[in-house]
Length: 199
Ligand code: HEC
Image (cartoon, rainbow, N blue to C red):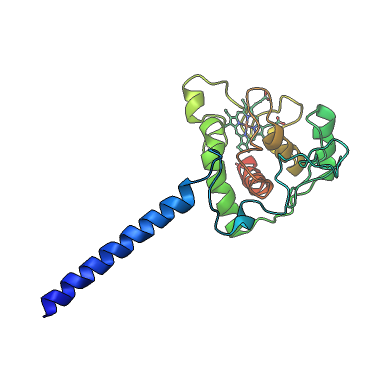
C-alpha cells in the first residue's frame, strides 16, 4: 500500500516538473524580438525612472545626463593644498602651513611606520640619505640633520610646510607621494622627519 502511494507521488512530482518546464519555456522563449529580455519580473528594476549616466537627456543644454561639476567643485572630504609646485609655492607653504598634528607617542609611531615604508629606501632609517637603493647607486638625498637642501638652507631647518610640499609634489629625483599618502598620513610623516632632523 505505502509503495503504491510512493509510486503515485513520484508520478505527481514528475508531471508537476514537466508542466513547470513547459510553461516557463513558453513564457520566456516565445518573443518575436530576438533581443527581447522576455517576460520580466519587477520591470522597474530594468526600466527605472532615474536617468542612466550615458542616456540622452533633454533637461540639459548639451543633451547629456552626465554633467561636468561646476568649476571649483571639490569632492567631499578632499583636503585642499593651495600651494603650487613652484619655489614660490614652497616658500609660501613654509610660512603659512602648520602641522595640525602634535607629536604624541601614537602620531610619532604612525609617522615612523609610514616613513620606514615610503621614505627610508632612499633617505635611510635614520634619515641620513643612505637607504638601500642609494647603496645600489640611486642619487643620495641629503641627510635631514647634517645636509643642505638644494633649494637653500640646512635640511635640519626645513619647516612643516616645506616638508609637506616636498611629499606632495616630490623634488627632482624624488617623486610625488600624493597618491600613496593621504594628507593625514603626510602630516604624521612630517612629525617623524622633524625627529630625524635632530639626530
Ligand atoms: C626614490 C628615492 C626617494 C624616496 C622614496 C623619498 N625621497 Fe625624499 N628625496 C630624495 C632625493 C634624491 C632628494 C633630494 C632632491 C633634490 O634636492 O634634488 C630628496 C629630498 C627630500 C627632502 C628635502 C626637500 C628640500 O626642500 O630640499 C625632503 C623633506 C624629503 N625628501 C622627504 C621625503 C619623505 C618624507 C619621503 C617619504 C614620504 C621621501 N622623501 C621619499 C629621494 C627620495
